[in-house]
Amino acid sequence: MESSNTIAAHESQPIVTSDGPMLRPLGVTVVGVLSILGGALGFMSSFSVIIQTVAAPFISDLFSQGGPFQGSQAAMQKEMFDVVSRYAIPNCLIAVAGMVLTAMMVTGGGGLFMRKPWSRQLLRRTFLFMIIWEFVRLILNGFMQVEIIPINQAYFQSTAAGPGGGEAMAQFASIMTYVGLVFYVVWVLVKLGLLTWGRKYLAKPHLDGYWNSPQRS
Image (cartoon, rainbow, N blue to C red; front, side, top):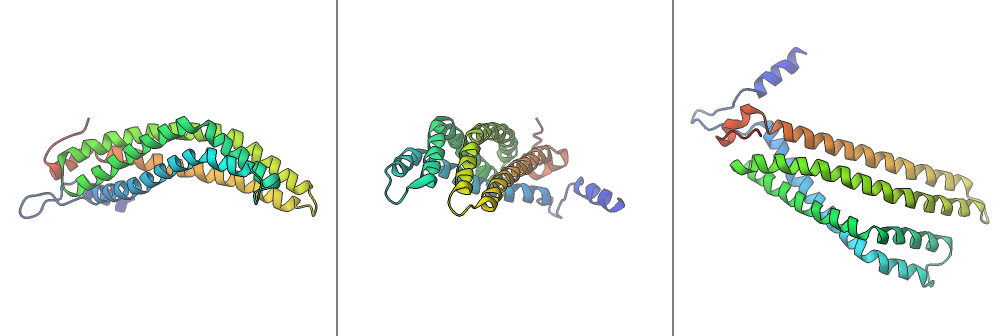
């Protein structure tokens, strides 16, 4: 307990060199690195969502043509891509917004390391919009999963009822679907926690000396 108080007290003190300028606090480094890495990965993820959404109708038509894609698995894949196609507009809008926000995160993260005064406020506002964006995306994905999960379950049931059984495999696949959903929700909560922490941390008054300009609004 005493050790944590000591660390907190040390962090709350401006770090100044003999020449005067404040050294970069560890927290600023953490926020900057997470902003750049998270922003870059998030940008690529949002871009891939756009590609997948645009390609969904063509892939759905491919499965409906038979050929190498036949049987219940082909039907399941077609139904799933049909669901993605129905949510194409909101998915693309959210993905485009995600690309803009993640680009701002990368810009703000770079600005932190270059001591740009605007980077502090840019990241705080971007983090706030990212929190809202994560909630909206979570809700949209929830609506999509409500339609996709029954499709998966119907396929697993048909597999278990087919020749050779496969009940254990069908049950395992169904369980893994829900496990994947739990991991997704946990990951969203982790990101929300980091965004909230980063926004609050950048508002701390002892960081003013790093930019030589107070910005706490």
